[in-house]
Amino acid sequence: MNMLIESQKLIEAINLDKKACNLDNLVYLLGLDFGSTTSSALVASTKISRSVTGRMQFSEITIIYKSEAVFTPFTNGNIDLCKISVLIHGWLAKSKISAHQLFSGGSIITGLAAQSDNASALQSLIKDIIGDSVIATADDPCLESWLAFMGCAASLSRYNTDEWMLNLDIGGGTTNAALGLNGDVQATGCYFIGARHFQFVPGSYELVAVSSYGQALLDDLKIYKYIGDSLNKVECTNIINCYIQMLEAITLGSSDSFNSELSNSKVAKLHQQVALKSQLQIKPKITFSGGVGELLYQFISGANLPNTTHFGDLGIDLARAIANSKILSADLHTHIPENKGRATLYGLTLHNTEISGHTLFLPNPNLLPLSNVPIIAKLSLNMSSEQWQNAFKLATSRKQGACIQIINLATPNLADVHRLATMIQEHFTRSLYPTEQPLVILIEANIGNTLGQYCSNWGETMLQLVVIDEVPLRHAQFVRLGRLQQQVLPVSFFGMH
Image (cartoon, rainbow, N blue to C red; front, side, top):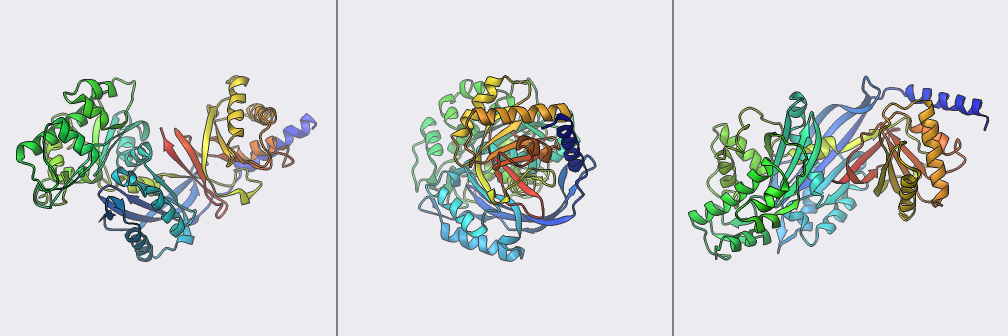
């Protein structure tokens, strides 16, 4: 193609991208959270518009339905799918929003619920009821940590722009930790520390159930009690003290100290699912969320907590012990976050979906939705040809499609677009990438249509190419592209790391 004509087409495509009009569409988002202790739902309405910088965003968010938290139904250690089905249908009916009206959303199965043998069956049930507008994921601990930070501490973090913040989301089965600065999560971790590893007859310490992690702790402490036995005060105190030592170790530094410096390091290591790793020598401000976090903030505000083991677990004891820890309680009165008890649910509903619209490149809308698309690599213009080729070779093996993120190109010029498109074309051809297999390119810059047009020789080749732009890049393993609705596309990430 004549270079002058080629450059003119690129300029016209870029101008078209820049002129994409503002939107004012009302859409609905759904979040479903199934945890170790409780389950709940949230439905929000929001408009899709463009910010002053041109990026598409949700605006005028309104919560139109928030369910009461209910105990997650279990039968013989597995999730009761029949009762869950009744719950979901009931939540939709009360919200007065039908499944086909949903733009996007998510369902997350966490903690001990995610470790149930039928957690995958619950994912399938959610898809059957809701359809493909909502992504359902189980046992994605780093995603849960990210969601909890966004739902609980993000606003507070953006207000205190130069303060590092560590959010501990403590529920029934896990403590999800996320470290962030100015509203952006920098590191995540997850630990099997929670209130419901020991379950009691409410109002007593008579054991009715103990998780495998709880049993390991009993063995380590040489507490020989079984179902039907009651723990005494000293035994309960010893269990809670172990949890507090673990939580303090998380807040004080690296996973090395968590594994080696604790008196019960072997059992502590067992409780570590994903280590919170940070190379920074900092002392972050600490916030809390989750069911235990909600109890904690109630306690320090002077509110009366329910009686001991009111919920049939150690949540109340753990909240009081955190308040009495000098390390953990240091910021309780100065840094109080929002959405404490349901931080994951708010994060899931309001923050897990990004949007791309008029400037994306999507020659074949029938490709969508695309679920579980692995993010093969993060590539930049300054990487070697070998790195590019290795990424494309790996991508060819993914029959359901593959995704490549383009990094370090926030404000490209015409020459950058030309060079990037040439590299994509070259390595697409050299790798013998299957022409029928979807290839998703993610890029932050507002050049989706421009890049896609050039890569495909203005629609003549690479017919399964999708270029998603204006989407912030995340440290994730998979991406999901929803259906195109009102000329905008929901984009979700999971498998955070």
